[in-house]
Amino acid sequence: MNRTIIWLGFLLIAQLVLTLLIYRPPQIMTRGLEGAPLVRFNSARVTEITVDDDRDQEAVIRLEQGRWVLPELSGLPADAGMVNALIGAITATDHSWPVAKSVPARQRFQVAAYHYRRRITLIGSDELLGTVYLGTSPGFRQVHARNDSGEAIYSINLNAYDAPGLDGEWIDRDLLQSGNPKQLELDDVMLSKIDNQWLTQNGEAPDDRELQALLLALSSLQIEGVADEDDQRSLAEASPERRIKIATDDDSHSLELFSLNGRYAVYDSRYPLFFAISDYNYQRLLGINTALIAGNDPTGE
Image 1 (cartoon, rainbow, N blue to C red):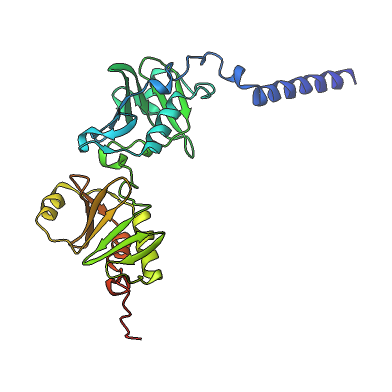
Image 2: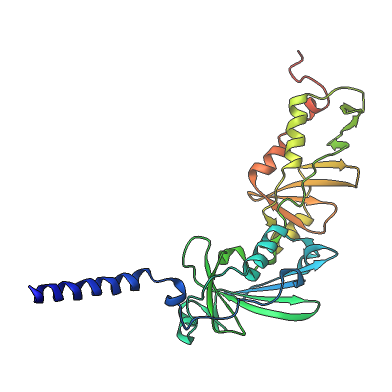
């Protein structure tokens, strides 16, 4: 009987030890992995970012006059949301405990100086703030990251593809949107907004449905990126399918629509480059009926 009690006691102790091993708190599990935060600088200090990827491509984003721009793409605006998400993920202070800190782990998680998916160089006031490597993904919206100056490898809230190595992937997709025009010229029809009412140059009221379709297409126009170099040259010599002039309280500019071998592009007079757009966005603008915009009923009714 005593022997049975002793054996049961040992079994109970073994179960307690096993439970402790499985459910012990992270502080115990990660003992020896304690390290500094991924970076020690504040996000507000970052004024320039260089992203190098594993295909030897590079993107540069710079803060100029309070706006993130792409200096290698004629200073076009970058997507501020993308930039802030990258900086925020890297400078966050709640990365929890490192997942590893050994030299072999750097290669396994692809965060070594010679083996990475992304190398993020962060600069502030012409001073190097730090270099961070992004590697493999342990889960949804998670990526392994390591500061070049440290050994600790963290899992941060980001995807590697959220930090592309191409300048064109950082461009603001809403760049060409016009949300509140005061005057429009579509082909040879001019519209003016007077006392909150749209009228043609002849004093006719445009078809409201067609007008709203045009206004919606202009206010929600999205680009897919910058047209490639070959298309830039071809488009410069092509004639537009449609030209739309737009005047707002702030400026006046024109949009020109192009079709090129099944690809679609738009040129905005405010910028020096042609932009790629989807078939959907192209057809929304090309399909506007000029006769209806002019206030004419094409059916003759």
